[in-house]
Length: 404
Image (tube, rainbow, N blue to C red; front, side, top):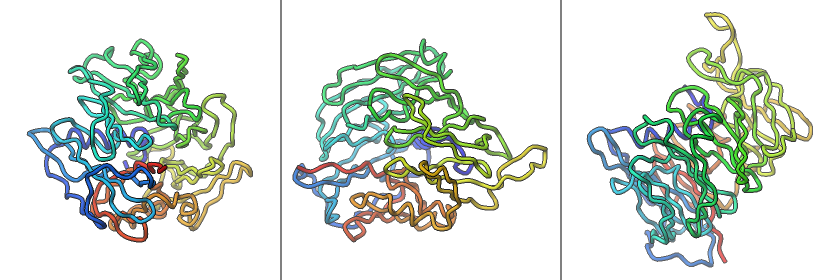
């Protein structure tokens, strides 16, 4: 459906495909820099940390991703530490690995575990029952709290599910909600997608295991829950804004798109509007927010009459990229969006060059956030410190582990 789903739905689909499909193993990652060091890296240096899907262990009907978490010196690109995770021991996908300071949290099918950057276990935060399975997870911006949604492992009991928030350092349960709350709120098992800027609440998606738009709700650690409906089109990574489409979503021309003619950007906690962007066409996921949450790049497709009546987006004609600036309220098409996005990138994070996807993705290929998940069938180069440090097909940049 050509990247037309919500950000939440796209992330869920990737995780589900990696977890459930059987078949061929992935091509292993190839180190491009210094040989791997397995000892605990020095705490003096900031480290760029990535998770790579290096292969898979397959059984009849199921594939278990093999992951490697690799840390590089952010200045030189030299490899500082590497460890393996996942496989048949505990099903794990790249989207369920999080960087919390100088530790890594892995949310697997059996356990939620704190690990050092060299892979040593520092503590088990959760042990899942046999009838439980994680949907998605989200780490608070300060790295202190982890929210994990869960569903019935057999996908049968709609009353068996919930959302749990735990303290990363101790595993202490901070808050827990069940399906008595999320059944009415989102009509499906909860899947946390992003924390609010104050780390006192988060946006939760209804994980219904079906195509089409899901329903969002806002939950707060004081216990309050507010149903948003199927209108959330994007969440700013810092939790300062959400983008909503008042007209909701619609099926159109064998795909799904926002039906609204405008996007409304607002604070998810107090509802204060930051701006409204009137669209010439359907705005589609993904969106790329500026670091200061004062502008956003978004992808739009021309609208044309549908053969069966109504309208649909003309994705065959190619995407157009628009820049919306909140202060001016201007929405303008930009001929070189990659130049704008390059100024938004953190220079301490790796850059990723995907050989096969650049043409297919059009102008949006240069706009992507370095921390978005990457699947590059022809292979991607991960560059840091002026050199290629890794070559692989599937990875995600977790972030920067601070130094002393």
